[in-house]
Image (cartoon, rainbow, N blue to C red):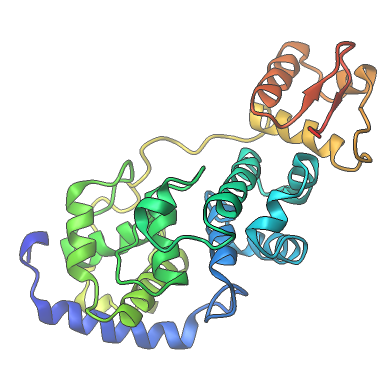
Length: 302
Protein backbone atom coordinates (compact mmCIF):
# COMPACT_ATOMS: atom_id res chain seq x y z
CA UNK A 1 0.00 0.00 0.00
CA UNK A 2 1.39 3.42 -0.96
CA UNK A 3 0.24 6.86 0.07
CA UNK A 4 -0.92 7.60 -3.49
CA UNK A 5 -2.83 4.31 -3.99
CA UNK A 6 -4.73 3.65 -0.81
CA UNK A 7 -7.92 1.66 -1.29
CA UNK A 8 -11.11 3.59 -0.62
CA UNK A 9 -12.32 0.72 1.55
CA UNK A 10 -9.42 1.35 3.94
CA UNK A 11 -10.59 4.92 4.48
CA UNK A 12 -14.16 3.73 5.06
CA UNK A 13 -13.04 1.24 7.72
CA UNK A 14 -10.96 3.94 9.40
CA UNK A 15 -13.88 6.39 9.39
CA UNK A 16 -16.16 3.88 11.10
CA UNK A 17 -13.61 2.70 13.65
CA UNK A 18 -12.41 6.16 14.61
CA UNK A 19 -15.94 7.56 14.72
CA UNK A 20 -16.96 4.89 17.24
CA UNK A 21 -13.83 5.59 19.29
CA UNK A 22 -14.59 9.33 19.26
CA UNK A 23 -18.09 8.78 20.60
CA UNK A 24 -16.71 6.80 23.54
CA UNK A 25 -13.43 8.53 24.38
CA UNK A 26 -13.56 12.15 23.19
CA UNK A 27 -12.73 14.55 26.00
CA UNK A 28 -15.65 16.67 27.11
CA UNK A 29 -14.00 20.03 26.46
CA UNK A 30 -16.25 23.10 26.84
CA UNK A 31 -15.92 24.32 23.25
CA UNK A 32 -16.89 20.97 21.73
CA UNK A 33 -20.21 19.40 20.69
CA UNK A 34 -21.84 22.63 19.54
CA UNK A 35 -21.55 24.40 22.90
CA UNK A 36 -19.43 27.31 21.67
CA UNK A 37 -19.83 30.14 19.22
CA UNK A 38 -17.50 30.30 16.21
CA UNK A 39 -15.61 33.07 18.04
CA UNK A 40 -15.14 30.75 21.02
CA UNK A 41 -13.76 28.05 18.72
CA UNK A 42 -11.27 30.54 17.30
CA UNK A 43 -10.16 31.61 20.79
CA UNK A 44 -9.64 27.96 21.73
CA UNK A 45 -7.56 27.29 18.63
CA UNK A 46 -5.32 30.31 19.26
CA UNK A 47 -4.86 29.40 22.93
CA UNK A 48 -4.09 25.76 22.06
CA UNK A 49 -1.14 26.57 19.81
CA UNK A 50 1.89 24.95 21.49
CA UNK A 51 -0.17 24.52 24.67
CA UNK A 52 -1.83 21.41 26.11
CA UNK A 53 -5.63 21.38 26.02
CA UNK A 54 -5.86 20.62 29.73
CA UNK A 55 -4.07 23.88 30.50
CA UNK A 56 -6.25 25.85 28.12
CA UNK A 57 -9.65 24.98 29.63
CA UNK A 58 -9.70 27.31 32.69
CA UNK A 59 -8.17 30.20 30.76
CA UNK A 60 -10.67 29.78 27.92
CA UNK A 61 -13.60 29.67 30.32
CA UNK A 62 -12.50 32.84 32.13
CA UNK A 63 -11.70 34.58 28.85
CA UNK A 64 -15.09 33.82 27.32
CA UNK A 65 -16.89 35.01 30.45
CA UNK A 66 -15.07 38.34 30.20
CA UNK A 67 -15.11 38.71 26.42
CA UNK A 68 -17.80 36.51 24.85
CA UNK A 69 -17.43 37.98 21.38
CA UNK A 70 -14.97 39.88 19.23
CA UNK A 71 -16.40 43.31 20.04
CA UNK A 72 -15.99 42.75 23.77
CA UNK A 73 -12.35 41.75 23.37
CA UNK A 74 -11.68 44.61 20.95
CA UNK A 75 -12.76 47.08 23.64
CA UNK A 76 -10.47 45.58 26.30
CA UNK A 77 -7.14 47.19 27.11
CA UNK A 78 -3.88 45.52 26.21
CA UNK A 79 -3.05 45.26 29.92
CA UNK A 80 -6.31 43.41 30.63
CA UNK A 81 -5.69 41.01 27.77
CA UNK A 82 -2.09 40.24 28.79
CA UNK A 83 -3.14 39.74 32.41
CA UNK A 84 -5.96 37.35 31.44
CA UNK A 85 -3.56 35.35 29.26
CA UNK A 86 -1.80 34.37 32.47
CA UNK A 87 0.69 31.52 32.16
CA UNK A 88 -0.47 30.16 28.82
CA UNK A 89 2.87 31.08 27.26
CA UNK A 90 3.77 32.97 24.09
CA UNK A 91 1.75 36.02 25.24
CA UNK A 92 2.15 37.79 21.91
CA UNK A 93 -0.74 35.53 20.86
CA UNK A 94 -2.99 37.47 23.24
CA UNK A 95 -2.31 40.78 21.54
CA UNK A 96 -2.73 39.23 18.10
CA UNK A 97 -6.09 37.87 19.21
CA UNK A 98 -7.11 41.36 20.30
CA UNK A 99 -5.98 42.74 16.92
CA UNK A 100 -8.04 40.01 15.26
CA UNK A 101 -11.06 40.97 17.37
CA UNK A 102 -10.83 44.60 16.25
CA UNK A 103 -10.93 43.55 12.60
CA UNK A 104 -13.80 41.10 13.14
CA UNK A 105 -15.76 43.89 14.83
CA UNK A 106 -14.94 46.56 12.27
CA UNK A 107 -14.74 44.61 9.00
CA UNK A 108 -17.26 41.84 9.59
CA UNK A 109 -19.87 43.40 11.90
CA UNK A 110 -18.71 41.27 14.85
CA UNK A 111 -19.38 38.01 12.96
CA UNK A 112 -16.45 35.68 12.36
CA UNK A 113 -16.20 35.18 8.58
CA UNK A 114 -17.03 31.84 7.00
CA UNK A 115 -14.55 31.74 4.11
CA UNK A 116 -10.94 30.63 4.14
CA UNK A 117 -9.61 33.74 2.41
CA UNK A 118 -11.36 36.09 4.83
CA UNK A 119 -10.21 34.12 7.87
CA UNK A 120 -6.53 34.06 6.90
CA UNK A 121 -6.69 37.81 6.25
CA UNK A 122 -7.15 38.30 10.00
CA UNK A 123 -4.11 38.96 12.26
CA UNK A 124 -2.57 35.80 13.68
CA UNK A 125 -4.76 33.41 11.66
CA UNK A 126 -2.93 30.91 9.48
CA UNK A 127 -3.88 27.86 7.44
CA UNK A 128 -4.47 25.50 10.35
CA UNK A 129 -6.59 27.90 12.42
CA UNK A 130 -8.69 28.99 9.45
CA UNK A 131 -9.34 25.37 8.45
CA UNK A 132 -10.14 24.37 12.04
CA UNK A 133 -12.71 27.16 12.36
CA UNK A 134 -14.34 26.22 9.05
CA UNK A 135 -14.57 22.58 10.08
CA UNK A 136 -15.27 22.72 13.83
CA UNK A 137 -17.35 25.92 14.00
CA UNK A 138 -19.06 26.04 10.61
CA UNK A 139 -19.19 22.36 9.67
CA UNK A 140 -17.57 22.80 6.29
CA UNK A 141 -15.91 19.85 4.57
CA UNK A 142 -12.26 20.89 4.67
CA UNK A 143 -9.17 18.95 5.76
CA UNK A 144 -7.51 20.16 8.95
CA UNK A 145 -3.79 19.56 9.36
CA UNK A 146 -1.96 19.92 12.65
CA UNK A 147 0.99 17.90 13.97
CA UNK A 148 -1.21 15.23 15.54
CA UNK A 149 -3.35 14.72 12.45
CA UNK A 150 -0.35 14.55 10.15
CA UNK A 151 1.28 11.96 12.41
CA UNK A 152 -1.80 9.73 12.51
CA UNK A 153 -2.49 9.88 8.78
CA UNK A 154 1.14 9.33 7.80
CA UNK A 155 1.54 6.37 10.12
CA UNK A 156 -1.76 4.64 9.43
CA UNK A 157 -1.97 5.08 5.67
CA UNK A 158 1.60 5.70 4.46
CA UNK A 159 3.30 3.37 6.95
CA UNK A 160 6.10 5.78 7.83
CA UNK A 161 6.95 8.12 10.68
CA UNK A 162 5.98 11.77 10.41
CA UNK A 163 9.12 13.88 10.72
CA UNK A 164 7.51 17.20 11.60
CA UNK A 165 8.56 20.39 9.88
CA UNK A 166 6.32 22.31 7.54
CA UNK A 167 3.29 20.72 5.89
CA UNK A 168 4.20 19.09 2.59
CA UNK A 169 2.05 18.71 -0.56
CA UNK A 170 1.76 14.96 0.05
CA UNK A 171 0.41 15.66 3.55
CA UNK A 172 -2.37 17.79 2.09
CA UNK A 173 -3.07 15.24 -0.64
CA UNK A 174 -3.42 12.43 1.92
CA UNK A 175 -5.59 14.54 4.25
CA UNK A 176 -7.93 15.44 1.39
CA UNK A 177 -8.10 11.84 0.18
CA UNK A 178 -8.87 10.52 3.68
CA UNK A 179 -11.64 13.05 4.36
CA UNK A 180 -15.17 11.56 4.54
CA UNK A 181 -17.72 12.79 2.02
CA UNK A 182 -20.25 14.46 4.32
CA UNK A 183 -19.44 17.74 6.07
CA UNK A 184 -20.54 16.46 9.50
CA UNK A 185 -18.59 13.23 9.09
CA UNK A 186 -15.55 15.23 7.95
CA UNK A 187 -15.70 17.43 11.07
CA UNK A 188 -15.87 14.37 13.31
CA UNK A 189 -12.98 12.79 11.42
CA UNK A 190 -10.82 15.89 11.80
CA UNK A 191 -11.48 16.16 15.53
CA UNK A 192 -11.18 12.43 16.18
CA UNK A 193 -7.90 12.13 14.27
CA UNK A 194 -6.49 15.06 16.23
CA UNK A 195 -7.69 13.54 19.50
CA UNK A 196 -6.19 10.17 18.63
CA UNK A 197 -2.84 11.81 17.98
CA UNK A 198 -2.99 13.65 21.31
CA UNK A 199 -4.09 10.73 23.48
CA UNK A 200 -3.04 7.47 21.77
CA UNK A 201 -0.88 7.85 18.65
CA UNK A 202 1.69 9.98 20.43
CA UNK A 203 5.05 10.96 18.98
CA UNK A 204 7.45 8.93 21.09
CA UNK A 205 5.32 6.35 22.90
CA UNK A 206 2.15 5.50 20.98
CA UNK A 207 -0.29 3.21 22.80
CA UNK A 208 -0.85 1.00 19.76
CA UNK A 209 -2.70 -1.64 21.78
CA UNK A 210 -5.38 0.97 22.58
CA UNK A 211 -5.70 2.36 19.07
CA UNK A 212 -8.93 1.71 17.15
CA UNK A 213 -6.92 1.74 13.90
CA UNK A 214 -4.24 -0.74 14.98
CA UNK A 215 -5.51 -3.58 12.76
CA UNK A 216 -5.20 -1.40 9.66
CA UNK A 217 -2.12 0.68 10.57
CA UNK A 218 0.62 0.30 7.97
CA UNK A 219 3.17 1.79 10.38
CA UNK A 220 2.46 -0.83 13.05
CA UNK A 221 2.47 -3.62 10.48
CA UNK A 222 5.91 -2.48 9.29
CA UNK A 223 7.34 -2.66 12.82
CA UNK A 224 7.01 1.09 13.55
CA UNK A 225 10.14 2.11 11.57
CA UNK A 226 11.85 5.28 12.83
CA UNK A 227 9.50 5.64 15.79
CA UNK A 228 10.00 8.92 17.62
CA UNK A 229 12.10 10.57 14.95
CA UNK A 230 9.48 13.22 14.35
CA UNK A 231 11.23 16.12 16.03
CA UNK A 232 13.11 18.42 13.68
CA UNK A 233 15.08 19.86 16.62
CA UNK A 234 15.56 18.92 20.27
CA UNK A 235 13.05 20.25 22.76
CA UNK A 236 14.45 23.47 24.26
CA UNK A 237 15.11 23.53 27.97
CA UNK A 238 13.10 26.15 29.83
CA UNK A 239 15.23 27.01 32.86
CA UNK A 240 17.44 30.01 32.18
CA UNK A 241 15.96 30.77 28.77
CA UNK A 242 14.66 34.12 27.56
CA UNK A 243 11.19 32.59 27.65
CA UNK A 244 11.54 32.07 31.39
CA UNK A 245 12.82 35.61 31.96
CA UNK A 246 10.03 37.16 29.88
CA UNK A 247 7.51 35.13 31.83
CA UNK A 248 8.95 36.31 35.15
CA UNK A 249 8.70 39.94 34.05
CA UNK A 250 5.07 39.61 32.97
CA UNK A 251 4.18 37.67 36.13
CA UNK A 252 5.52 40.59 38.19
CA UNK A 253 3.35 43.07 36.28
CA UNK A 254 0.02 41.22 36.17
CA UNK A 255 -0.97 41.82 39.83
CA UNK A 256 -0.44 45.58 39.53
CA UNK A 257 -3.35 48.00 39.19
CA UNK A 258 -4.04 49.47 35.77
CA UNK A 259 -1.33 51.97 34.83
CA UNK A 260 0.80 51.16 37.89
CA UNK A 261 4.51 50.78 37.24
CA UNK A 262 7.11 48.43 38.67
CA UNK A 263 10.07 50.59 39.86
CA UNK A 264 13.45 50.05 38.24
CA UNK A 265 15.02 48.75 41.44
CA UNK A 266 12.39 46.02 41.61
CA UNK A 267 12.79 45.30 37.93
CA UNK A 268 16.53 44.80 38.41
CA UNK A 269 15.83 42.20 41.11
CA UNK A 270 13.75 40.01 38.82
CA UNK A 271 16.74 38.28 37.20
CA UNK A 272 20.40 38.08 38.20
CA UNK A 273 21.84 38.29 34.69
CA UNK A 274 21.47 42.01 33.94
CA UNK A 275 22.38 41.65 30.25
CA UNK A 276 19.80 38.91 29.65
CA UNK A 277 17.17 40.82 31.61
CA UNK A 278 17.81 43.95 29.56
CA UNK A 279 17.53 42.00 26.32
CA UNK A 280 14.26 40.42 27.43
CA UNK A 281 12.82 43.77 28.50
CA UNK A 282 13.69 45.20 25.12
CA UNK A 283 12.05 42.29 23.30
CA UNK A 284 8.90 42.56 25.45
CA UNK A 285 8.76 46.28 24.67
CA UNK A 286 9.23 45.62 20.96
CA UNK A 287 6.42 43.03 21.04
CA UNK A 288 4.09 45.55 22.65
CA UNK A 289 3.78 43.49 25.84
CA UNK A 290 5.26 46.10 28.21
CA UNK A 291 6.06 49.81 28.26
CA UNK A 292 9.40 51.06 29.61
CA UNK A 293 9.42 54.44 31.37
CA UNK A 294 12.35 56.88 30.83
CA UNK A 295 13.71 56.05 34.30
CA UNK A 296 13.59 52.28 33.74
CA UNK A 297 10.28 51.49 35.48
CA UNK A 298 7.98 49.21 33.48
CA UNK A 299 4.25 48.58 33.20
CA UNK A 300 1.76 46.73 31.08
CA UNK A 301 0.64 48.64 27.97
CA UNK A 302 -2.43 50.84 28.34
